[in-house]
Image (cartoon, rainbow, N blue to C red; front, top):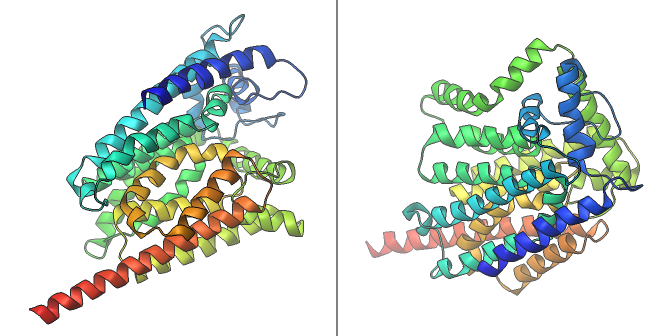
Length: 388
């Protein structure tokens, strides 16, 4: 673990900073921090109505996220790119918080009741692997927000295990505010155990989920051009990314749109609907625990969203680690091969459709594991009845 932290600092943080400092400004080099985020802050300060102006790499997040990037805007860039370095240091701090949260969650009695024996010994190994992910270097170098999203998702897991709905939905909202993809988790949890006091619970959950979006909602109301511009820029970039990037993508929607050369937007909508239909069937058919519900949401994000790439694994890996710690006793050699294939497809940045195939296989293994566990639980329950 100590080696992974030091490696993360020296190779990914410092190495990425040096690499960006050397390569910035050269032809063909695109750095999100300087190509999308800082220009967005500059446009907002000059004229707020131009925030979503279509540029070579436009701003596509919720409008209030511009204030996060504004924290680094006033730090001098020339001559040492101190603004990007400050962003990288903040992301590194979030990485450490993510590791702390995983340790905190695995120490909860609610989690220990789900984990396999001696699972705690794997925690440092898995967290070390998380910090060693090559995507970490990309995160620091581009000034992205995947690690921050991971932090909020882990906080949502923590409070879900503590059965505190208010903070669970609040941090789900925070995750969705930083990464639009995380919004796909909401339907997985919104109607959980809601039969009693349906309206009261539904409103309460939506209110706490919506709190992080209050600044964005206010900005949408103040600047009337934001809503159509926000939709347009995301649809435009979704189509552009579908035409440009061909590797390391796990999206079924993107795969279908690429193979059949059709517009990805309607395919994305249909894919999301199908994934939710499958997910709700699983939720109705099988009794899933909290970690399995989050993992089900992870599969919806990975397989449905049209631009889910290797670096995005950073914001769902915390949930994946927790799920692994609760399900490894069911893994046979076939499932371990799937994990290996996923690692190859992500870290090797292999061409599609390998990434789609292995994540689809992973999802199939997940469903098999859930059904197998359900069958074992029923058998144990039947034995208890017979014995009594």
